[in-house]
Each structure stands twice: as C-alpha cells, then as structure tokens.
Image (tube, rainbow, N blue to C red):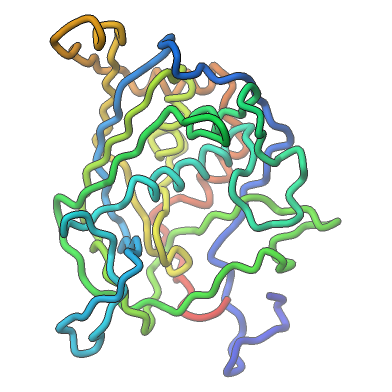
Length: 319
C-alpha cells in the first residue's frame, strides 16, 4: 500500500510487519544420498520449545466457551485433547528458513514473478539442499518432525486483529523491473489486540520437540540446527497463525543431538544400539565447511527475526 493511501476511517496505513530476505542468485543441486544405504548421520534431535509470544495453530474448528465476551473461539490444534504444534507446521516453518539461507529453490509461493531458475527441480537426481533434506516430488525427505506437545503452561483466549490474505501482486513485493524483493518473514514485537478470539498457548508455555533424521551429512544437520535458531547470529522462528500481529514467537532450548553410529546393528542385533551424543557446535561449523550457508542471507534473516523487539508495536488494523 502506498504512503498516500489511507485505511477506512481516514487513518494512515501502518508500517509493514515484515521484511524480505533476497532470493539466492543460483541453485546448487546434486543427487541425494537416498534411502537404500546408510553412509552419513542417523538419529534424533531432542529439545524443548518456549513460547515467547502467544502461539496459535488452528484446528479448523470453532468451539463454544464459557467466556461471556467470546462465546465462540477458533480452537487450537489438539491431539487426544492435548494442545500440540503439528509436526507439519514445524517442518514448514524450518523448511522456509533453510530455503532462505541456502542455495535452494522456492518450494511454495504465489508470486508469478519467480524466476524459472529458482523454481524447484522435478528431477530426483538433481535436488537442492532443502529438497534433499525435506523431500521433493518423487523423493521422500530425510527428516521427520513429530508433534510438539504442550507439557507446561496452559491455553487461554486472546482477542486478535482481523487479518487479510497476502496479495502477491501488490507493488510492495517488487523491486525495479518487477523483480521480487525476496522471501517474506514477519518480525517480532509487542502483540496487537483485536476482536477475533483465538485459543492460544500462553507466553512461557513449554512444548516437547523431536526431529528424526537419516542419512544427513554433518553439514546438512548443521544447516537444520542453524535454521532452528541455534547458531550465530541467533534468531527466533515464528509459526502458526497471527504472525502479523506478533503471535508465534518460539525459541528452541536444551537441544540434544543423538546419533546412531551403526545402522547395521538395527538389523543384526536384538538390542537397540545406544545412541551417542554429538557436539552441536561442530555440526554448526560443518554447515559452513560444506558451503551450505549463504552468510549474507543469514545476517539479513537474523536482523528480521531478532528478539526481543520492544521497539515494535505490531499492527492492530490494515497495513
């Protein structure tokens, strides 16, 4: 929206709650390791997620409440009655970051101006690093995100602003010659209030987190750890609904990487092989040693996703 346009009621438009990480100049692809042999790292990442702002992942259901102000509320996603962040939501959040900070294609977009060279490969023998990790058409990914289950804290009802769908054709997304500015990420800040009731995991809530992986190189695993906000410079991912209103700020804490050294033992021994802890700083460095990280994109994203942001009040109306 241009600066001379106004919202209904004559109010000046608010600042945009997002910024852009420029797209990669080229894509680097190669054949994936595959699933027919185990030559690299296999295991799991265990951690916890801390909610630094209210988190809402919609279940698609409206539920009746005893709250007189909000008799109906958009419910948070649950499994067997327990609030969770679905593994698919976590996977999508982290994949978008991996794509932004590496020489990867843009897997999901509504933008019609995306250059052909940045579109995903449909050839399983030539996949970029995000496709090798998360999967592509004709190739199963090498990571599995489990649901993050609420173990501390509670849900409550939060009134949030009415939001509108993104408009990919808007000029704000374009530079000169109709080139895309980059990939959009929402900034953190002070959450805005409104009249749309959402059930949210409250600030300070703790959820379990587990990601299983197989046949990742040390650098690929390190790239995932950086995307989760465990590298330097640090950042705090955002997920779920209400991101423009500053919902969905999370932090990954107490990470522990366990590696199963010999996958052959899974098939030859009756007893499950004991996993071995792996040094996280060494994996972070491996991502750079394997040249998987684009440092200029990392710095740009870290600036957008830095937290806390007490200097920013998130928009409570159109922007």
